[in-house]
Amino acid sequence: MNNTISIMQRDTQLQNLIAFEYIINEIANRLFIDHYNDVTHCKNLMSKLKVNNTALLKYFLLYQIHRLLLRMYYLQR
Image (cartoon, rainbow, N blue to C red; front, side, top):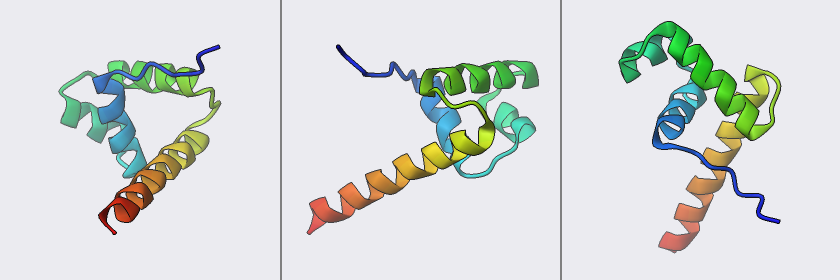
């Protein structure tokens, strides 16, 4: 069974902004979307990642960024 999650480019942009502590209105302004679209994107992302609140979403995203940075660090050595 394939456990891969399909993450779109917009999801990736949203992930980065959430991880860096932007609030909903700031995210909506940066992505040039309506506040309500942003809320929907967040809900869809939480559903894809199987997390049930924004705190877990932020934790998951920061964990993924940390893993990526470690990988980049060790590849440079």
